[in-house]
Length: 151
Image (tube, rainbow, N blue to C red; front, side, top):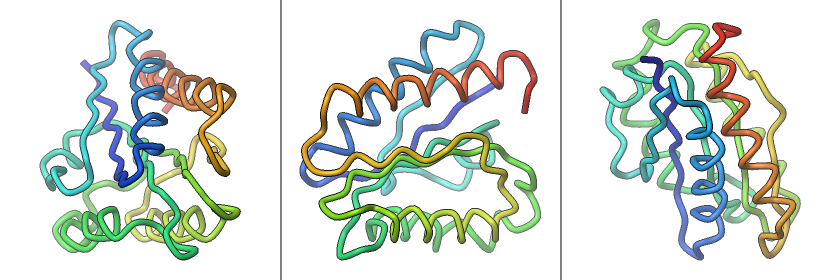
């Protein structure tokens, strides 16, 4: 069974709400195993075992969270050359515009050799119903893509 790993960090709870919506959408696809992990709890084996990744972060001071950066710091070298072409997408909870966090994740994903398969979703300010819907759709899209072999 294909595996979608949703990794996130939250302090306010907003990013967790988005992550849980993404998980709900992903779980609509029965033949994909979808797993939700906090960034600090995510291991190299979790990353290597995932067929696709959905990465969520708050924007802190115009950048991704330190927890997500920590995950990248811990796994980049041992994962080098082992995750080429892995599909991924991003969601950001931002008090500002979120583009700084998005750009940093995309830059790091390029280093891993991952392939963006859906546009990032940035929730600005308080999480709205439309943000939850967008993340639910993002989760379903990645899971469906795995299910049909699109990526």
